[in-house]
Image 1 (cartoon, rainbow, N blue to C red):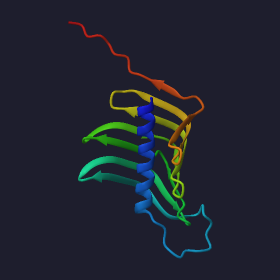
Image 2 (image 1 turned 180 degrees about the horizontal axis):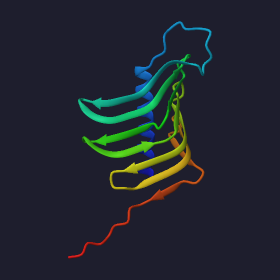
Image 3 (image 1 turned 120 degrees about the horizontal axis):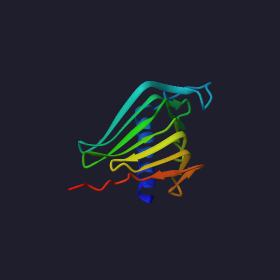
Length: 154
């Protein structure tokens, strides 16, 4: 469970950081509230690589960065896939992911589902990642499911 929570947090941080790097708001923009998007992409996808090796792939129907640059929001079925040594190991989906770029805290809302390559699944309606404390909270009706192994017949 702890391993899945750590992977979940990594996925959120990767998604938020990549959006921040790609969607930096225009400098000097004024007269807009902090919640008004200054940059918004439809059907966005980001692939993160380290030394040429795919680490994660993040897709969302919409990615927005607020005018003041403090908030990045992923909506419309955000989906992230994490790779280890080139193999998919974890898939994360939710309804909405909001990153506070100042604190690196993340709030996730609705339909959270984390699935491993081996078939283990964690679901929850809400979650939050507190970067400073290194704490992931899955809230309200968390379920963990393990695949049932069927014995093989000779």
